[in-house]
Length: 219
Image 1 (tube, one colour):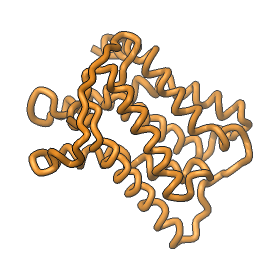
Image 2 (cartoon, one colour):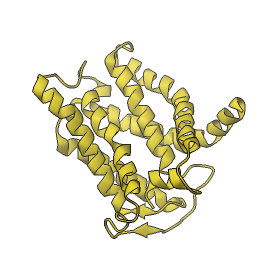
Image 3 (cartoon, rainbow, N blue to C red):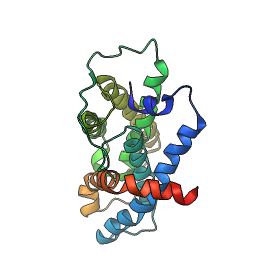
Image 4 (cartoon, helix red, strand yellow):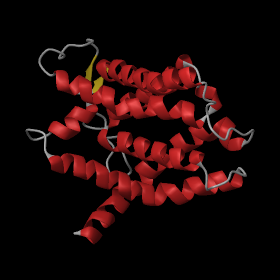
């Protein structure tokens, strides 16, 4: 079953509490990720009060949400589970909502990449990055109870492509310069990989314990 749908539908019909849980996971993650990302920006010589910073924090929140709902392994749980599906679109007629949810999950990634880094002004670069991210997630799911599914790759790339078009077409028509505030520094050249690693490390080592503490403190 597809990752996002598997999270939302687990145990029965869609529940608002599922979305609330994802939102709370994103919030708790951002408490850790925000100062770390601001430090990277500061060390790169970037102005912290800028559209780039706002877009970056939104992007990190999206990544944290994706990592959360796809059920990646973490330091508290990691075990082999070779459950996989290699038949494309096998369940599209019986569970179309599963495919839609996976498409929606990657639309923000395709939308934000061209707004953040000059390297991602072409659809090939955007889809290449999202392909790497999806393959990484699918391989990581071998060490969890989730199913590694070829349909996740297809739907995620479709979502990323739609997100790219949502920003690229208006930018082309309006002759907008993307990304805003471009500069030749470490963050511009290597930021996307640094943040991907940052979120992965945070989710693997810190989030299992921090999330539990965060929930206990609120409740």
